[in-house]
Length: 141
Image (cartoon, rainbow, N blue to C red; front, side, top):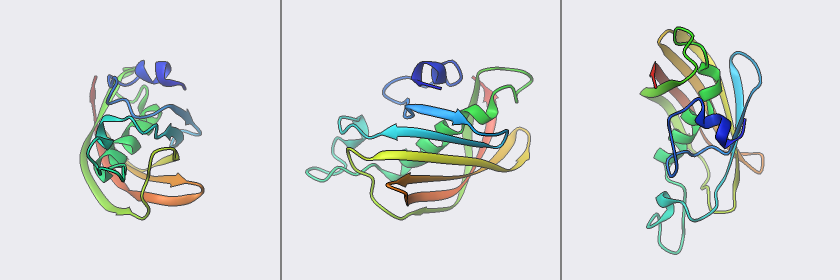
């Protein structure tokens, strides 16, 4: 799915739409892409002369990249809004900077609707930059 197709699922819009592409690999796994351009709002001042993608933004990117896993899970609703209910075991291993192409891997590891626990990680150049477990609750968009 490209950005326009993702907008059919998520209500996020620029500048908060933070996924370029996403593909559903199975009922429980998805992979997404985002290239850090360098002009994003969250890099302005984080940090001057050394821009680094903030950890909280990385967590948001993981949630957005899992969007295709929730299509149709809310009483047949196509558009859902996964909202954070918790985070666990989140580790930031490498900095992500402008020009980096992030590979976003997500997998549902547990579910008790409307709550889903997702294991997610961000890779750049095949190296893990961030990983963790994220609990989301599905609500109507």
